[in-house]
Length: 264
Length: 320
Image (cartoon, rainbow over the protein chains, first blue to last red):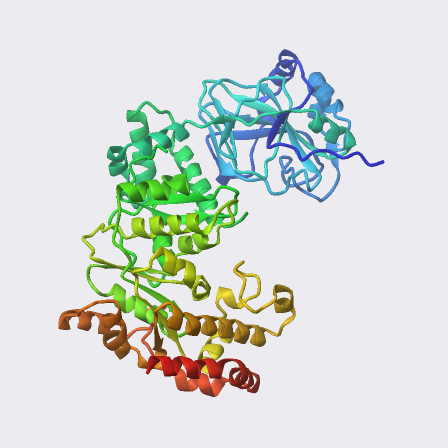
């Protein structure tokens, strides 16, 4: 009999938990030379870099996760990181790329979608936060998902997402690309779904809709840059803490929503 | 229900697929519906970041509530038509008249006629239609008149629309069927493709429609539209207007029927529109009736002779 599994939610915490202190101890052994800048340089500002724990030998960049050329194999680095290796080994499914991804304080990954991944396509990316801080904002499909150190998360990264580290310290996630099998399907089925929290822009949107006087300050602006800038300023004046990226993402979402309004 | 302040906001889109339709209110301010079609003006508004980002999404009853507080002009004329017969020319000429609002094939009105919300009966539909048209008729620039051009298939909804707006005069525009057929085959409107709109066409079985050759389907839909126009012009007091009488017919027949008395300056403004192609005003208007008749294939001519020409002749007699 073939087991049937429910369609997974956008984000869910898997029933796996690791010791963040042990993982951070491994992290501390990495030299600066192990970190490579992320190849997608158009996607971020600041420093987004990675260390390969499982990669394709001889590929142009050990950070490539979506290559279908060659076999993935554990790197020497993984061999030297005992606790990280234990995490990786606890996954009872075929693994592709495994990386540590670091977003330094003040850095920012712009909104994008990862089209190469997907539950339907049988490839799933799992995140294990190794070190993070309360100033990290991970926003998936317009909702903020808070992932804590040592937890293990399934995320539907086909959906638009962005990350910003507004904290004082670096954020490092262990990112494991898995091939879906019954073990992983079972883990995802038992995971705790998380709808995320409303972004700070949403209450501001409601305020604007309820106050014609505030509307007057924005309605005549046709230039997108100027509009983003003024909206952030106006938000700050009314005690909100969103940035231009948030307004821009809300605009993109509104455009999608408008274009798709006829789709049932 | 408690409503936000909707002064300057208009219900530009109604999404009807969900069990509870959603009305999208957009802040249109004093923006006029001057494009050839209602939705082109809405799309232009949606290019602006404010409109995209800040929209009220409210239930259908928001229409009724807001219209009570902010009633607008009663519609002064409806334009029904068989498509490809000068209806956009007429609506653009009326739009050139200073102080008049013209809504050309507005999708929200179609959504209200067709919303499948559970329990939506005719009385409810009539209330929504009156509310929507009333709100769209709010003078935002001191306007004094309101006209609506409907979609071709709304001729089937004439009895309901007459009940909703019993005092509004209306016309039915028609044209030599061969010319309409040739134009429609080149670029069929939504109602001429089976299943594109979920309005049922009287006399055509939907399953049969899918198996029918395209040309025959187009002819059968046009026949149904012409038959409805013919029947209702007689029974519901409309006026049949032939494409061949345009643009002079706008001044000699349509304006008096809609109760408009036009000054020479107004007539000049309306005539200026006729130099251009009504749907694509970046092109000059070129008479094409003869070339369309010459382009008709034998199948088109045969279908017209059996299905459409007799209806056309009856409509011509009504216009005399």
